Length: 257
Image (cartoon, rainbow, N blue to C red; front, side):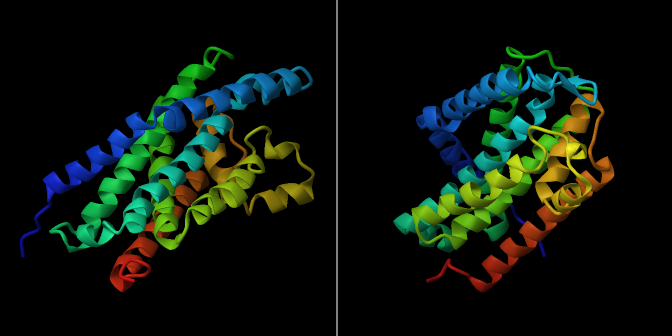
């Protein structure tokens, strides 16, 4: 049995989603970069004056991976969830499902576009951060691996949210009430080793800790948890997201109603 990939359809969906980024440049790129810059000013200035360094890294530089991860997680989810929710909202999802495009091609197109936007945003924030603090990247290859893996994984998660949501409020529910708090409590602005033993043990149940720790290690060679464990947790979450998406398309959950 031959396996044919509809490259033209994938390219069309991908280009359409990417074009939406340029049409909404202020919301997609400029606003997150400005918000992150404000974090540098507020946290780097106010807290940095009281905490000179953590693990031998200046506080301003220490929070850079956490801030990039904060934007990466929220934007990956938002881009992917809105990308698939909008066709559901307008009813064009039925045309897409009846077209000669496989479920795999649909997922790759939407998730690929969402991940591309997030990675682009992450690199822009990284470049912007050099205006505020001196940064060095000890392991550039692994930095890109964690960046791409996290963007793809949370774009898959966002795709699931976009299918699950039946109104615009639900699209914002998970990023605002779950992902952002978990990121703030996951060591974005501090090392979990600074916490009392009980709270450190509780924090280790937060999956975002492993993402931020691995990403920070790629910059400064310092990690709160094992780098291999960070990588394994990211891959495991990606596998779970792929399994859920496969189940959604197999059962037609919230697609064929």
